[in-house]
Length: 276
Image 1: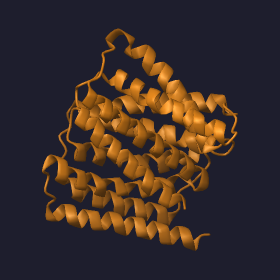
Image 2: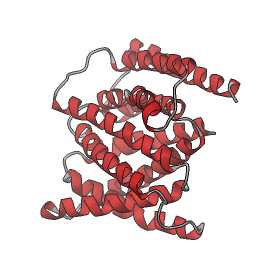
Image 3: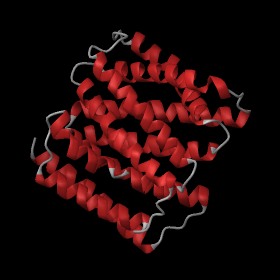
């Protein structure tokens, strides 16, 4: 169940990424983050109240760390998306499972087994073939790598919060704090979006919030490195988006890489089933 949730979360995040890229430089990044969280906040609050969950998480110190890492990661990721090709950005973002597996033993007391490392390694090879083993290391690329590192830290904090709080409460609290931080930061340059920009913002908010909920739920059910490896599915979807919206035709190496990514995911799922 956790792997299926992570696959679905990955699809939501790639869709959100494509919408952010479509929005381009039309809005300041801080305003984009503010409006994205402001639109989602009433829905998330309604869910928390409907299911009678507490409004605040128990471990507020971990929540603050999750918010700090998550907010910085989002800003870096949005910057990278608007300044480099979608496929390259997603490729660099796929370093996150490796970083997650490296940090999990120290921050959440989890250690990736041999089979998990094999699955991650297969996925990394497949990802490299999909994107091709050449990335222009401009400023945006370094920012994308920083986003991956910060997101890995944020996801580990989500894993810790999932031990004591419901996923809906965690997502609501994070979105509320994100709204406050980004809203304050966007005040000096606040502009009124156009009708088309509002539609894109609604899509970004919807897919981002749904992805956050699915991701949080996945990390509360399964070990961090195992769930993170399932996020390789986002690479395949980014190829599809690239083909239909940016006229990017996958090469043979991309097809082989996609097959390796699927192989790594299937191997991981089989390994998880055997150990339960």
